[in-house]
Length: 275
Image (cartoon, rainbow, N blue to C red; front, side, top):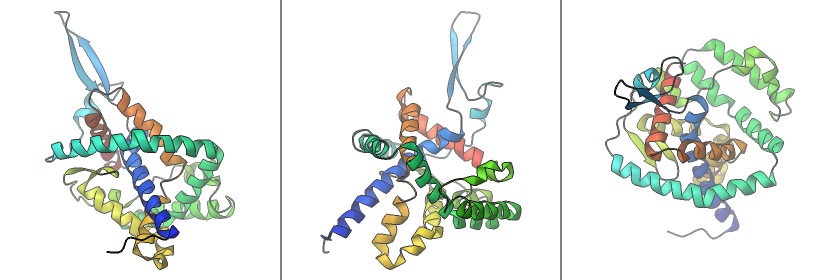
């Protein structure tokens, strides 16, 4: 097997590594954006001792967490080892890189990049809307895409946010479609660099790459070029870098980082299945 030595190949390798890393950060922290972090509630008893119980709801502590359908984790020792490896990569390699990225590109520029990528992934969302028979949502998604593409200058600006009916269109992807179809999660897996996925979401992630227009546009670059751009472009944006901060928030105060991330991931699954 010949190792590629051209400048193009080297840049492709760097893009793949960066893209997979930010994909892992996104997977581990997307739950933090939608689900409330677990809160520890201390209940005093008559003896004066405190009973500690998890809670994620102010109105009824513990109920939301207790009702979560836990994803089987039969390979936990292996997952914990991979999680530790990923944590070191994020902490010592990619966290410094995100600081450089934020310094080089101010927030408005990062937001514009993220908006363009999101707008370009319209086919993935609308395909999954149709697969779930959400024709009304697919129509709104199409209106949103056309508005942002034209008035939003190719999607740089999310003009659709000014219209309530378009601003609240729920996000959709292949993993959510699988959940709606009743396909079970399978086991919980921590992938190197990629981060946590259920077996179902691993296949869903591959489906999203296949549905991504960026993949279609780079087929001429060969399999490696396609993989590098398809996995990198959607994630090396302001969204990926900002979520590095969310990952820190989720794990810094946790006694067990692995359990904290898994809990948030499961809460996000519950919310997706209820959409």
